[in-house]
Length: 410
Image 1 (cartoon, rainbow, N blue to C red):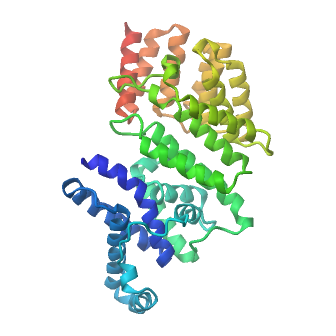
Image 2 (cartoon, one colour; image 1 turned 60 degrees about the horizontal axis):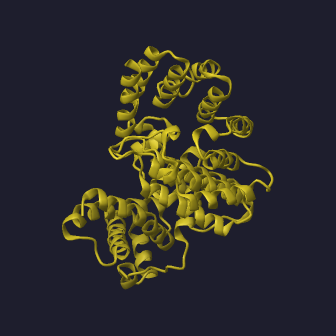
Image 3 (spheres, rainbow, N blue to C red; image 1 turned 135 degrees about the horizontal axis):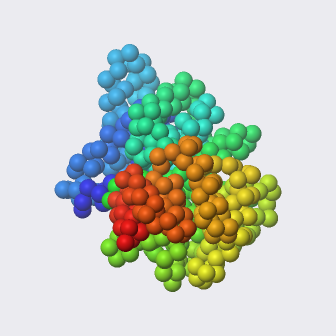
């Protein structure tokens, strides 16, 4: 088994192990450090020795030992160490059963812990992406469009703040659940996006991340079936991931939506997503995930590119901009605007976006290049595609954009 395959497996186990340790000991910062050390041990040993028969138990045992080592090494906390050993029998502390309380929903409780109200919303999201999704600091920084150092400091401060606030490992009371649910949904949305379009690396997609995001959102939906936004987010994920297999060609290069073989789309996922979003749109108040899911449904129900109802998509983007304006949704709206009112109208919008938070972002340059090509300015389009390729972190995106630049250059 390769190191990459081991890392993919570990990503699914990490939040479960962390949930077990935090529920047992309550010390999020120390438990998270212990789990990280256990993951490093696994990466170093599993590729050669093979995955243990009970990998979850193996990781939990190693992480528990690392946690005990941390407590022991801190002389100023001797009394706490003694209390720990008095409270938890050693055989329980170091046991490695094949299944550790499978009925408990530790990952969801961990999600809500990371979204504690003592943290700022950006810190809540960053900590959850690190603890539950297992994303690296670099990956999280890319999702937030901030430097790695800034994100590392934010995560460290968030763990310290949880300790100071005495955060408990439990589902929040009803009055707190609504605001924290919004953050949880946003985190799951970012997790899915990182899996669907990796910000860096040799792969366009990371199916392990999208699968984890869908699984966690399904769990939330089962717990909160009347939440329109939870239903909307699950629908959005299903409708988007349904196109996953058609997004790359045989050589691994990106295939844009307009050129995809729609017979490769997952029709079962589309049907489930459409049903979910149709039902969720009846709930009030309407939320941004429901609107995004409706946009994805319009794309998914078009048998061909020519059948796409772009006026409806543009109208939905207008609604989304009223509900939750953002540079990314504005950029996506510009694409729809170009289809309805022409490339020049959309280019005016893109020029404004290039001077905001998306300045220097490869996606805004790629959209500008697409619109320039659509407007017939192939030389300018080639230059913009080349600039976008140089800024893209994902190798498949780089290759795609360079090929577009060469095509426009003739």
